[in-house]
Structure formats: structure tokens, C-alpha cells
Length: 99
Image (cartoon, rainbow, N blue to C red; front, top):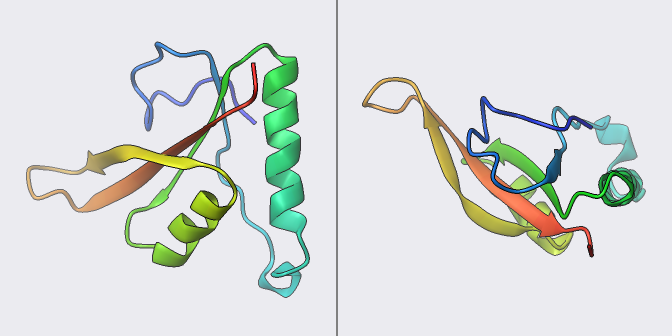
């Protein structure tokens, strides 16, 4: 958990927590570990009085994007990196913490 991620989310108008670099070992796929970690992050963010939990992933990672949508996140846009030819893009997601 981090409380700012200006490289990915430069506009800090909302009070949010950010999941950054979440990775689980593939041997844990399907065990619910990812869901548990995201639930913990949401609870921790809410405890800090922050209304949103945000994360990002490679725009081309369709499976991960679908996973985040199933976890209750909503797609809110993308951020491009590189020159005018945009060599890398991330998909941006957020969810309400219930505040």
C-alpha cells in the first residue's frame, strides 16, 4: 500500500490508497490469495479515511483487467508512457472503499 502514486496517477484530487506491485506466485492462483490481499488493501485504505482504492496494470493484460473488474474495480482510463508513439500504456482502475 502506498498513499500516492504520482507517476501513474498524477492528479491527486481524490483521497485514495494505491496498490502498487501486487504479484502472487502462480502456484497460488485460484486459492483466493489475490482477493484476500485486495480486501485487506481496501480495509486499510478505509481505515486511513480514504474513499478510493486504485491500481493499474498493463493495458494489454486482458486476463488481469477482467480479474480486477470481477473484484469490483471499475475501469477509469489509461495512462500512456513514452514519446508520441506511446511505447507502454497502463489501464487504470479504482473502487470505492465505502466511505
